[in-house]
Image 1 (cartoon, helix red, strand yellow):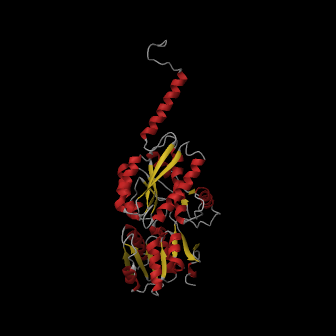
Image 2 (cartoon, one colour):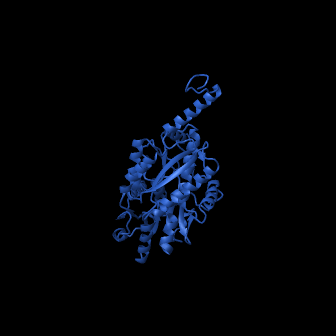
Image 3 (tube, rainbow, N blue to C red):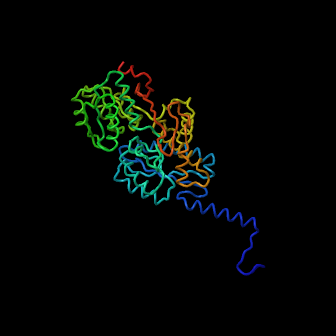
Length: 397
């Protein structure tokens, strides 16, 4: 019993106001999935197991390195950004279950996905749930066009990569270009980029060969393209089949100029192809990681050494690192009372932002453009290292 009657508790006015503010903030957090007073939960599905597992693990490794640093510095508005990474084995049949698991976990947003075949499954589901997806390790055009409100792309597209390849080859009078590609949405996305690039020059691929995803059944594809005697061949696949293709081709005495795109997983490709990787041109969507004169590359190297000691730098983990930077920048711009819509609008507010990756990569978004970068860094394998290719006329010399 107290002086105001049974069961009634008296609060001084200031305390009542403080209590009301706490209740209001807690209610706002409760209305936004994955957001609490001290954390923000991001969900990821990628290839952590299976034939392409290096790509998924490196993507998550790079993202985690940046998020660890942010969290050690106090997080975003006092909230730690937590990443829950699940495996889909680069298999679209496993994607629905992985997505449902993330929804069950109540994540705020999605990020750090790997691959076009799985992205084709995830994107419609994310759109239906109205949940943001930031940073997909794929440059498939279907992610860029038409604009998808919930999908935020960071990297340049496969069209950007293949245009760079074809235009430079054309300048060298290399006109007969074949394609050996993975027979799935990824392979077809890159193939379409090659076709469009050649179309601008009034040309088309001289031969096409295919292989099945997650297999090394490459012989029919090699022979189909080899028969046309192309001067250059674009190989479209992750590291294992790409390495097998160049090794078998060279063993057969066939040595056209081989090229591939960033998804290959450069370092693992070089490791598996060995000496046969020499001279392969690989377009990258990140600058070489030895460019520590670029502030973000230097920061990436520092964070990698601190949070994953012993792990060597790779183009894939650098991309994951940069994807995480975009996620955090969006969270900062969205403010303390973050919601999914505020988060998307915040990323759309990023214009002409120098993110410390050199003059080619300036981050640009808007409400009508969710493609962050549109330039690439071509590299060529020399002495088992990917080296920036600044003079294409040196090819073959």
